[in-house]
Image (tube, rainbow, N blue to C red):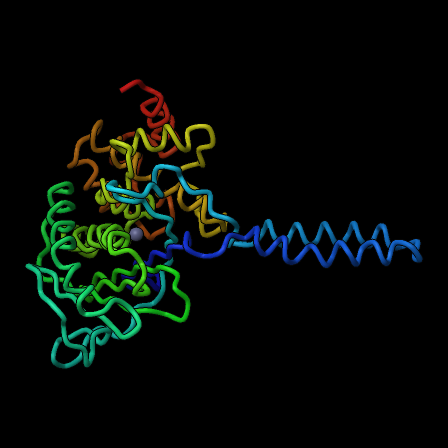
Length: 332
Ligand SMILES: [Zn+2]
């Protein structure tokens, strides 16, 4: 068994300063220094070139490069905004207290209950008034993703608004404990919180539907399904994920079995989440939901391409990828 404990985390970095700001503030004094040493040292030119190469290499390797946001996803106004996110898996905290309450919620009292959603908030995150204002849109989001995925929660789920030192946006679904945590500062627009929770709720629905198999699901399936299931909350002005990928990523698709944690950029993660969501759409449309469910359950660990594509679909992931690319290129 891999040390995996059912923890889905989404880090949203679009609100962080762009990397280019750091670049300019860092290179300006370096440029000045370069001119000074060049005048009296014959080794200065190669040294300066070496320094520049090292500096560029460091910047290119950084996981916090400037985010290339899909234009539609950041649209303001009435359309829901899409997301920038980062998936990470970490060990979950101990499961629950003797009273059956998740330790993640120990000592906390809910602010409001809305159907199957029990909402909590912490000091420094949304106020209780904001949390109450989120009750209706979150319940609406749950209804929407339930209808879209044709899945139901097996029991209530708790949503905790919390915060960290930075005001980056993290969402985490502890599906075994039925707790979703969103780290957010109070000035984060409420609709962005709803967008992220919609994605996390699909992870909980998947857990309730697929059971233990969910904890071994291929990342392509689990993140593709969660993103696809969040539908309008991630699509901005696009009608569906095929259109989204066609219009934003078609000229630079990443291989479907890429692991964005190794690619190390937010942009790569964005592309893969949306590509995988459109793959989920393709698989359900062309092979049917029952084959999709079978494939989801066939994962043998979370690594991309760990599901049994050949056994379930009669074609390996490479062949499926070709079919998916042809489907992407079709006029709708
Ligand atoms: Zn996710």
